[in-house]
Image 1 (tube, rainbow, N blue to C red):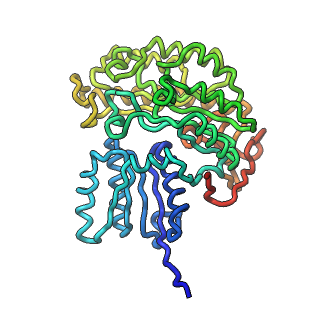
Image 2: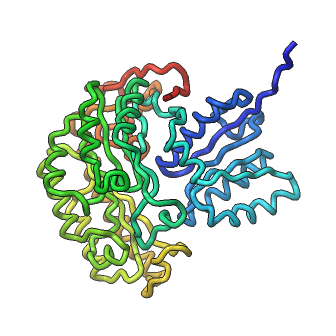
Image 3: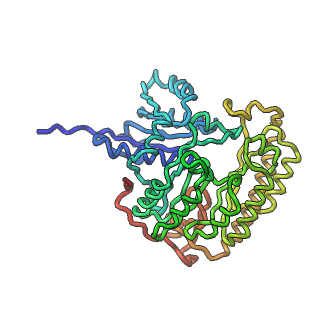
Length: 423
């Protein structure tokens, strides 16, 4: 009689970015495909869970602090923890953090490097889909980054850009659609530079042309677009793409040409205005999201006023404000003219007040318009819905009463189980 093998129950925690989430899905798919002696639980703190995979970013100090806090919380529950992370250079942080816990509960920690995880993305590893029941999924078209932004250490802790070939991206999109994805979200560290490593020049629009030819009813959006490599001809081509959602995620960081240069950006104020004006005139219905870094070293009162004036022009439907802080490995940490602590608080408060007022005004006007929504959650009194243009997991959702509903898409999404597989 064959002896029954006790199965190890594991779980997974993904922190921060959607690119990490795709990596987690590939890792989960690999485990579920290959490890017959392992069972997956969605609750990492379930008493039966023995092993937890923690996939996290490590290139911003606040994110590292959250990751270390999560590790310690898991260790206190006597879980075995396997870290999958970007920054091998910060390995000692994790080791030191765990030392204080080891004496009491003898935890087990192992580490999978980002390179090992990324190989799952670059090969034909099965992928476990975790958002498909909401009608969307992410499709990572490239990994890593060639840019040298002075405030960012991603190129230092990861590698040079590596894009998936166009035919593989299109095939993956087709598979996602077959798994009931109604919306595909294309992501990369810098989507505008997709294909440069494979084809010698950016090929994002050539890729989008191929995706447009998929003869199925679906939509897609592109995150992490930058204005520096976009030509007028390419921008005009965007207006001809019928499946393209006019959602523009443009991490601008600032409007001051001087600061943009010091940040290592490849565009300036005039290029930004040209890009935004094109969107407004060419897409009557659109959504623009950006983020800004406040109090970058050397930021003057004039730079601050430029940014206030820029925000006041009301181009944006969503704005994230990031507080600059020195990262030890980042070039910007060596820059002179750091901003005084008192001045930091004054500037950030002023920007936060301005952004909140503008966005609240936009939201008020939007809610008087007819919209198409996608259901997120249903309760007896309200329905939580995502407006059509809003990006999942990023932009605001609405709570409405059933009487307000005019049109709802994706009312019923068929899935075979909580986790579906893309082979």
